[in-house]
Image (cartoon, rainbow, N blue to C red; front, side, top):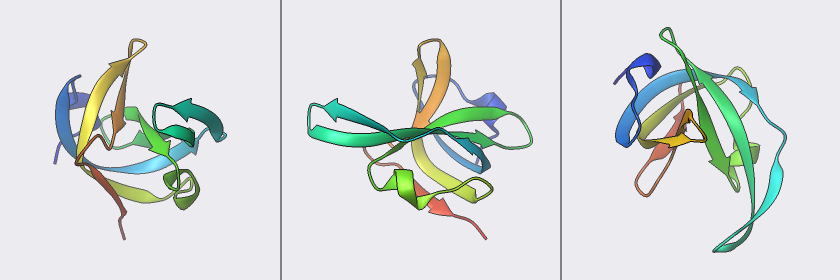
Length: 95
């Protein structure tokens, strides 16, 4: 488990954080066809980062929920760090 402030691009990370904001859902076209995407802001005691939510995940989570990202992928997107599930990542609700 690491704090958000210690995250760097091109690394896998497991973090616990609270969702503090979620953008409106957008319809996008990907190489796999149409999908929906939303950006959630995650915050812990050390900082905040954007989490990209895809498909059904855009409806599953809401502001105020505590989540654990397991094996998420951190990337630099347009000069800002983001975390996504990548190939092996998982997101789950915390008590």
